[in-house]
Image (cartoon, rainbow, N blue to C red; front, top):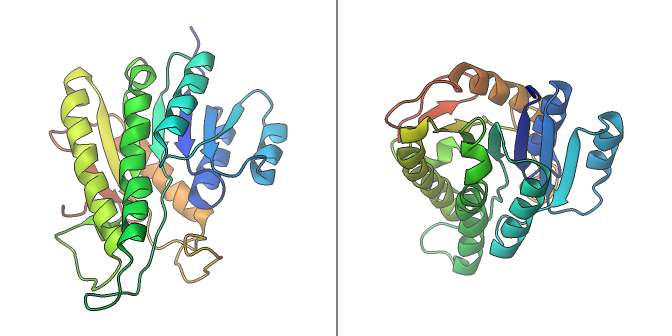
Length: 241
């Protein structure tokens, strides 16, 4: 019996996605890594370091066609996935409040990638997932918690993460009948490129955040509840919806 585990991760160009890719490769996984940067030097180095384990491909989760192409590529290599980690996201404007000149086209772009992207990819890969580990992990945020809402801006990101939570709940409702489950993880305040350039303002490095995320996955991966688990990666505390 083949005991090698397989994972698909989106948003692997840098940051948390790249760190998760490296950690799962180090744990012996075969990893399908999707990013928007062709020929990414970081991914290329990992491919040399972990020969035969890493399958990298171009993935734009905001594009129906790109996601379909990615699914066909993955299914040409394997008929099962142990885990899908929906990590790809963009931040958008975080300053404009009601009364400002809000860019609604940008909000739609953030929503398309940050919310719908995870639903697209989950939908496209549901067959190998349900044939494998039946586990979907979506990187959410405390910003998607209506119960904890306090911001006066961040329209695109907050709304997209709340929508991601709802979409993930709907997926969970369906697949848990067959042993599937969705886990929603807030990675904490992470040093990031999501503003377009490197921001050192966060509490955790991407590597630290990835380690926390994998710890929560290991703790929660076999638990099937009526609703998805929505949890902070660093503390393990559950978040209000």
